[in-house]
Length: 138
Figure 1: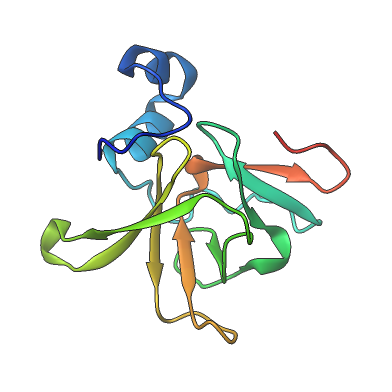
Figure 2: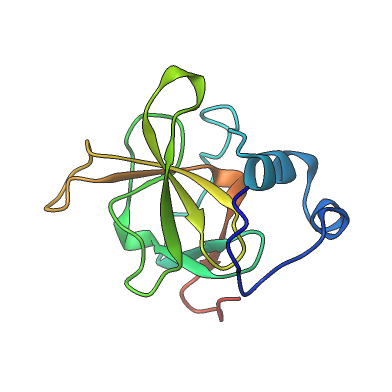
C-alpha cells in the first residue's frame, strides 16, 4: 500500500478487527475476490460506498452488467475520492482504482466500458457497501 497521507488512517490491527478476512485481503492487500460472488446487489436507486471508510464512491445509475463477474460502473461519483495508480502485477499492465480517503484497493478501471466515457470500473463487491437512496449514506 502506498504511504500517501490520507484522511482515514488505522493500524493493521484496527483494519483486521473492522473487516472480514476477505475484505481485509482485498482492500488492504490488493487482493481480488472470486468472480460472480457478489451478484446480490439491488437494482433499486442507491449509492455504493467504501467498505473501509464509508466514502461515497459510485451510484446505482452508473452500474451495469459487464458479464465479468464483478460489479461494474461507468464512472465514479463526481466528488468521489477514487484515485488511480499503475498496477504491473501478474505480468499485466492495468490501472488500479483505490479510495483516496483510506487507501483501500477497490479494483481496476478498463477502457472497454459503455457510454461516452468508454470506461469500466471493475470493482470488488467486498470493497463496497450499498445504501438505498431513501437511507442516509455513511
